[in-house]
Image (cartoon, helix red, strand yellow):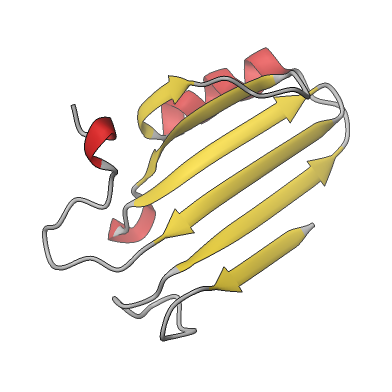
Length: 103
């Protein structure tokens, strides 16, 4: 499953004004601990968070691929893997992270 939701004035991912969310989901067989270890190596300021009522493991952090800074969370249980990325516009040099995540 892939879903891209434009929530701002432009639909171009390359635009500095782009604002939206990207969801990616997979069904299969996963080891949640191994998946979170891998994800934590690829996200900046990554941390484990409460996965909610469905259990499993969840990690959130910041994806800095291609010079963008996007908030990203990844959740996994033995049967599913879900990834959510939030992209928001920013001025040059502005930190997109929420204030509580900058510490």
